[in-house]
Image (cartoon, rainbow, N blue to C red):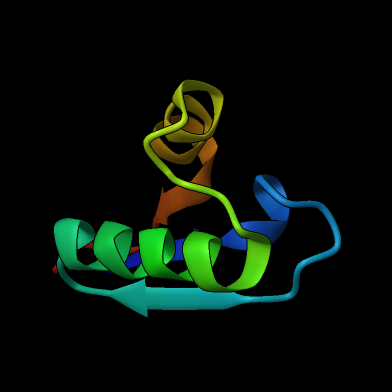
Length: 61
């Protein structure tokens, strides 16, 4: 299980999401950034932060 925690990238945002599939979770995180923060996850600092700290591993699938 993987979890996206937006606060780690956009401080103060309480949005979280989880999924068994990391790629599906990253797709939804990208939608969240576009719709709620007017950001593209392709922006290098955001993409780097997302891959390092935005999605955490919770437990084996």
